[in-house]
Amino acid sequence: MVQFASQHNLCLSVAGTGHDFLHRHSLDGSLFVRTSLMKSVEWTSGGVVVGPGLTFAELHYAASKANRSLASGWATTVGIVGWSLGGGHGPLSPKLGLGSDQILGVQVVGPDGSLYTATETGTRRVGLDGKVEESGATDLLWAVRGGGGSTWGVITSLTLKTHDLPQGGYTSVSASLAGDLCSGEGTLLGLLDTYLAWAMTLDENWGGLAWFTPQKSNGTCSVVWSFNLIYLYQGSSSDPTFKATLQDLLNGAPALQPQVTTYPDMWSIVLTKALEPIIPVSYLAPSGTMPGGLPSILISRETVADGSLSQTLKSQIHNCFAQNCYSYQFYQDITGNINSPQDPNVSVNPGMRSAIFHLVVILPTLQDVPTFYKLGEYSYFSESAFSMDSWQNRYWGPNYPRLLQIKQTMDPQNKFWCHHCVGDTSL
Image (cartoon, rainbow, N blue to C red; front, side, top):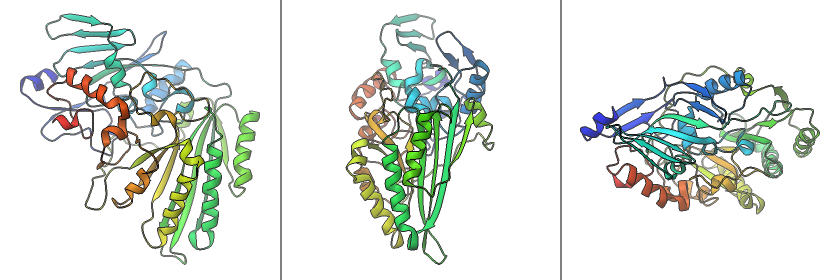
């Protein structure tokens, strides 16, 4: 199919599961390549070679049989390729690294139909004529380690790191609280400060998310709110460190009544979740007042420490009475925790390393988006706004020029294109 597209001057779009809010997996007038049925799993002494159609649920099942652990995201139906190539955040990332950190090798069919195999020792290219070229260049591997999917070619396999299961298993902590802004605004704002202070103390063994949701109501009070938290600790609930850290949160928020459950492996956690269909998710299109997608900001520890994040969100929450109410999702599942790994040989932006939170603001207006972007100069490639200025910098920062050079060398005619992906402006 790639060869046919090249011969007939057609663009190609590629999708595994299609779990993407920005419609990057589709392009009008292109040939569409769906890899969702390519589900091979091969364990090796140095990792695992996986097909591009695997979801996290399937990977965790395979890992449970091998007594190993794999980094993953939250939703069980997300595919491994798009998540890994886009950076990849998840509950195990503070300790195991981002999705891009897991990639040891990649096999990809390039725009000219050649098969490329890229590893940490070099790149091998097999042309359509069978000619083999080998070099010590690692540019392609570096590019796919955070440069985004659907733009380098058709990924046919990834070689990923595997990890030991933690002693004591995985301990899940979940809690929720609700109220209204008429009588309970102080409770919500105090809970926000308590949560932010607690999150700043967490080390690499903790990964999770919390979301604050004020919303308009037809009840006695015009605005109600809810707070939800779910974290995963890599270890047993009997660990003294776990107990002390959880107690620190409860000391500041005694109204929380957390549920604590320990699981032997990630597959056991998957089994507790409702079954989801593996279909492309809804496209969140932009409009005259909305940027589309899910605007995101990578929040540094400094922005939390100096109060900027708290002040901005408190102002927005207070204005919810008269203006717009937004839901805020705090993903503390990248590599900004204390002692988190910081592999430099990836192409993600610096914020994916230093940030403590990947903050997602649900459906803000174009008018309010700049207020949130002031909190951080970087965004997460796979969860972000559809309409966004300076997207090259927000996604990749100083790495974009090198990524663009690799793209232009490998795909000079831009056959693999997607919205706000590397090389977008050249089409």
